Image (cartoon, rainbow, N blue to C red; front, side):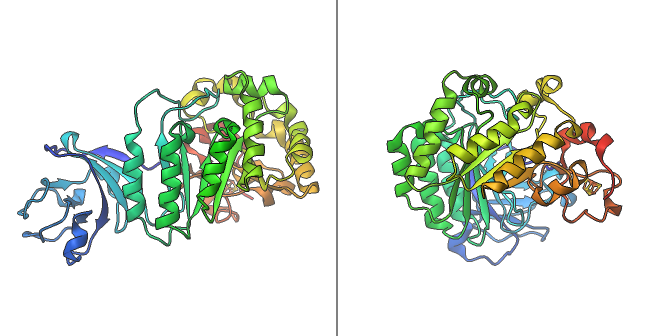
Amino acid sequence: MLNLRSRSTVAWDAPAYVARVVTNLSRPLPLREKEVLLTEAPAPLPPGFRGYFRPSIVAGSCQVAPVSGPVVTLPEELGYLADGDIVRVVPNVGEVTTLYRKSSPSNGIFLTEQCNCRCLFCPQPPREVADAHWVQTWQEAIALMDPRTEGLGITGGEPTMLPEGLLEIIRTCRNHLPHTALHLLSNGRMFNYASYCERMAALNHPDLVVGVPLYSDIPHEHDFLVQCPGAFDQTLRGVMNLARFGLRLEIRVVLCRQTVPRLASLATFISRNLPFVGHVAVMGLELMGYAKANADDLWLDPPAYQGVLAEAVGRLVTHRIGVSIYNHPLCVLRKELRPFARKSISDWKVEYFPTCPSCSQRERCGGAFFSTRERLSPFVANC
Ligand code: SF4
C-alpha cells in the first residue's frame, strides 16, 4: 500500500501550496512558480521554482536561489513521486501530500470528509470538519494535471456536502480536462433537489457518471445500513432526478451479511424501476474505517454468496443492464462470474498473494484490498 502523505524533517514558515513535480532543470521561467524541482543535481540549482525536492537517497541540502523555502529531502515513502505528479506542501509542518500521480489509472479528488450518512461499512468515516478549502486546492491541482488523464474519481465523505464547490470542481475539470472521464461517487440524497441536478446537468460535462449506492429494495433496510431514516426515498428520488436531467448513472451495491439476502430482489427492483441505469457495480467490502470496526458482523466469505451473486448478475444481464463485480480476486469467484470481474481497486491499495506470480490470470486479476487479504487468502487458488 502506498502512502500518499508524509512529513519531511524540514519545516519552515510559508503558506501551503499546490505544485507539479518536475525533473527538468530547464523549465520555462514562467512555469516554475507552480512547480517543485525534484533533482539529484549538484548545487547551484536553477532559481524560480516554488520548491525543491531531493530524493531520500540524496540527503542533505544545497545552495539554491531561495524562493519560498529550503530544499526538502523527500521521506522514503514518497520516493515514488515522479515527473508530472502533483503535491500539496504544508511548509509549517513539513507535510507533503500526493494529490495526483501522472502514471496512475486510479487518481481521485477527495473533496470533503463531511457526510450526511453513517454507512455501517464506510471505509472512510466522515468527520464534521470545515474543509471547504479543499475546493480551491483541487482546482489548482486540476489545472496542473496532464490533459491526457483518462479518468478521475470525485469522492469523500459525500461530495455534495460542498454543493457549490462540487459544481466548481466539475466545471474546472470540464475546462481543463475535457477528455477526462469523471466518476462522481455520491449517496444521491442531494439530488433529491431537482434544481441541484439541473445545475449539474447545465455544466454539460462531456463524460460524467454519477455512482449512487443502493443497498436494498426494502426502504428500512437501506436506511438502517446508511444509518439515516428517509435516505432510501431521497436517494431514489435523486436517482430519478439525475436521469430526468440526462446525467449518466451507475448503481453501487455492497456485498455483506446484511445485503446478500436481498441481492437478487434488488437486481429485479433495479431492472424494473430504474431501467435507465447504465451500469450496476456489485462491490466487495473494504475493511477499513467503520467496516473494520464492524467486520465480524458484516463479513461473508465469498463462497457464501456465489449463488445469489450469479442470480443477481443474471437478472441484470437479462434486462440489458451493464454489470460489474468489483473488489474480488478472480479465483474467489465462480467461473461464470469471472468475466464480470474488473480491476477496480486503486493501484495504491491493491495487494496480491504469495502464489499470484505463478497464476495464469495474474494480468487480468484485480487482486484484493490490503485490508481483506487475510480473510480472502483461504479461498485463493491459482487459476
Ligand atoms: S491466484 Fe492471485 S492472481 Fe490468480 S486469480 Fe487468485 S488472486 Fe488473482
